[in-house]
Image (cartoon, rainbow, N blue to C red; front, side):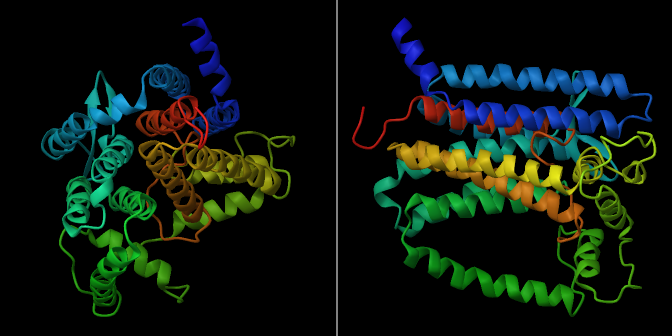
Length: 381
């Protein structure tokens, strides 16, 4: 038993753990800066530390449990998650005219964040279950139905960006599963024209789409507009974010003698979550921001390395799903903060404030570490 534990410890990818821990430490600093002028600074900091502690405890538990067992019970986890999403629409907390949170012991819980990880597990289980029948259309229909259900519930909250994140995860998992390109190509040939018609209808003819809010459409139209005076949604948030990132210069303001309270990002709404990269840019400058993005790249690279080295099909699908999850969240958050994408709300993994997002990201990485610990190399045992 002792030898087995030692062997498991040797197989832990400490590069993943160290990289994640550095990013979490940067997140703690950013939350301190975000709430510097707030009376809630201490309570927010304590909640964030509690979330980090819970995340590490869950990682330890996940490493100790065979991920095959977790995947085998993923159906029940999935059904529970769907039930929570449905309850959120009925009895969830209404904040800013959206229902995305359920209050548990006085702490807001956002089910849509954890749904991304749960869906990765369940899709991996289904792909493994239908591994010998992947090229049959009914299998693809099952995968689409399983993904469409949570997407529909999340859109009703509404939370379009999380729905798009799930859609991206689904696309990468389907691509990685080994489904025939012929099946994928046929599906795209049917879907893409519909998407094109909807996009043209909204952008050109201003057609209203059910379950899509006006402000979401206006954000996209504002982003596409070439008229600087066309203030469809008020690009104040993104413009302030760009100003904050630009004011950080090459080295940032953390090492400067300038007062910590005199920061451009202090005027940004949701600077602790959706626009946390504005804090990163102003505090750490171009060099610091680049290094942080490189840390994310290293983390994703290690996930892909573990995926490539494992001979277990289900483990490989999970690693690809987690990589897709991290890539989409990082790309969208940074893209919105730098105005490369329309304004939408997605957190930056490990750095943004939000306990559900933080814990979900840590669980996802914990699953990859688990796969790395229990991996069977091709040609070796």
